Amino acid sequence: MKRRNFIWYSLLFSSGCTAVKNLNNISKKSVSDFPKKLRFTVTDVKGSQELQRDYGAFRTVLEDILNIKIEFFPVESFIAAAPALQLSQVDLVLAGPSEYVILNARAKALPVVALTRPKYYPVIAVRANSGIKSITQLKGKKIAMRAKGGTAGHIYPTKLLLDAGLDPKSDVKLLFLGDRGMEALKKGEVDAIARSFSGYEKALRDGGLSATEFPAIAIGPPLPSDVFVVSNNLDSAFIERIQNLMLKHQDKLLKAILVSPSNEQFQGSKMTAVVDADYNIIRKVYKAIGEGDFIN
Image (cartoon, rainbow, N blue to C red; front, side):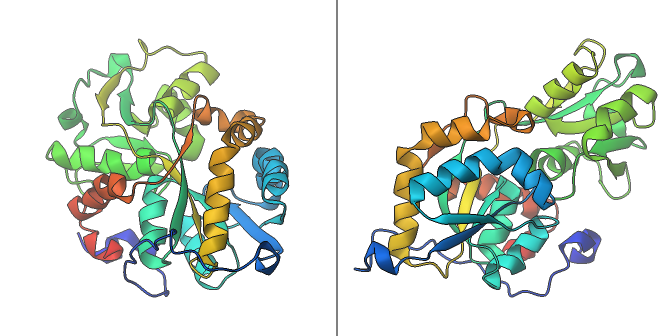
């Protein structure tokens, strides 16, 4: 599979990985020398209104904790977040695992805090009356995935298809339907859906459906946490301050995130230090689907 097959990755910013900076090598700058403002975005939330709806409470609490002004900087996708980081248009980004490895490799973004997600593993589900019992039976079928580049709703399910001997380009038809996947499956417009387990449960609940009617035929391994990353243009002492304060006050921040019903996937979440090696599983998937050069 060539890179042109992933046209949604077409970007003109520079390539190359970066080693994570050692945040222990702190400069002697005083707090008064730190930035007076941070621009914040979330890779899978589009538009200022959506950011305010889903992360307005979080922004308010983070402003209080860091004692600094936080401004939203909406991006159309995680692809757009990379050049925004490079151009210093955004300073702090909440990204999924797949987005993290891209932002780390392409924009040299630095991980600060991991945000765990319970029940975060990929699921492929079908209609019970379809007769489909295994992934291999999806050959020639339509599969609803959530969004291009999404960890549980695209990247890892694609790996599950490959592991089952299916070519995702020729053996199946992938449709990116966002949150409409379960409805499309119910109507027979697609033969299967790929989602995170928490997203699968939510889709069943919202539709008044049951796992008996729409059983999972494949469940992947637990996936790494989401990550708050920052621009590498920020001072190391300032980055460490952000990290320490977010971890110290995580209860307040997590409570604020959960103000929005849209963030229910973070029920039971924790903030932890980032272990970059945990994301090697995602890097391996990129190599498995023929896109390893993109994150090198």
